[in-house]
Image 1 (tube, rainbow, N blue to C red):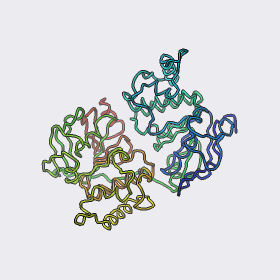
Image 2: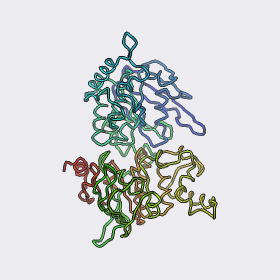
Image 3: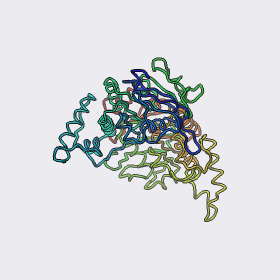
Image 4: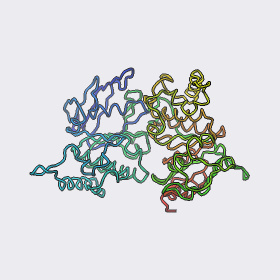
Length: 501
């Protein structure tokens, strides 16, 4: 093990019931480098990181840390050695302060045995100073912080263990573009101070912006490690999926005649404390992108239109007829479907099967008298599993065991079974791998060609520009600008999203 190698994983193998998650994986991490680990969902990234952070042991192989053979029994032991992991789902206690979260389970105490709040406060401020960013008030409750600020608290918490290796699992998945740039700058600062970072991300633009080396995993195996300077996005994607791969969908834009009538028209909608004077139109077979910064009101808007939030004022027209939507049943009856942003807590019944999740919104139509026609349910579910290429061992598989992309396609299948004319997709590619993302793009394009009107919410501007016929930009609860595809660019969208145009 060379002087600059802080961590080496040799022939790491891990098997779960029926699945070989890792098969003799090798990986090395140099001191003071950002090492990206990429792969499709199910490639073994999270399993490898959980082994490294002591969540569970490998079945075979060994871990060498700073030249010593170590056996990690639990995360506390890993942290004690200097290996800290920041999970995608942040693990902070919202009702405690920043400094209480940083030192949770090991509060500093003074000579009298009392909690040393002054000492914890000073330690927190010093850590933020070392990162080169303004300190978050240590006394502030975590529930009052933004997502990016919580991410920074997690980093300070990890560094409080004197971390030499920091594992970051999808750290930017819930951040805005500006917040992401700030976090990447913090990562570079850590690298300059000698901390090594293992960085898992589906966003390849971030991988190429921040990393020094890139390791590709596929089907639990190590495919290749290569310096970023010698890699290209196309090569990395091809290594991830095991074939030549073109991630960009060349979508034919939809034209519209001047006298065409809208399928959905919203006039002066207001809802809750945020949404004010929202007006827009949707046309048959178009992909209308809705974007803006986190907190701009995008999700609140589709929830109001789907009957999940009360509409306080305004008018809603479907196919030219004024309608009232007070609950999701009203929306479904009008041919509207919603794929929500939080698929696990809002969209899926995790303990139920793939078949049951697909048929959930269509049960009355499959009833025979007072009983569900199980044969029809199975046939319908199988049709959508095949047509959307949902990868599952069978329709009776519990949906929680599917990858993120296949879970998302399961929710899409649920609404397609209802034959919608209007479909709201709220961040449908969030947290899915590059292959599944491209499949979802093709599904969206195919639905639009069949005449389905799609409202596509996304904070990823490249995919907005890939898919959209028109772009709506929101800012602080208002519809600030409508852009044609020709007018839209990342720079123009961001100017309106930040109200700087």
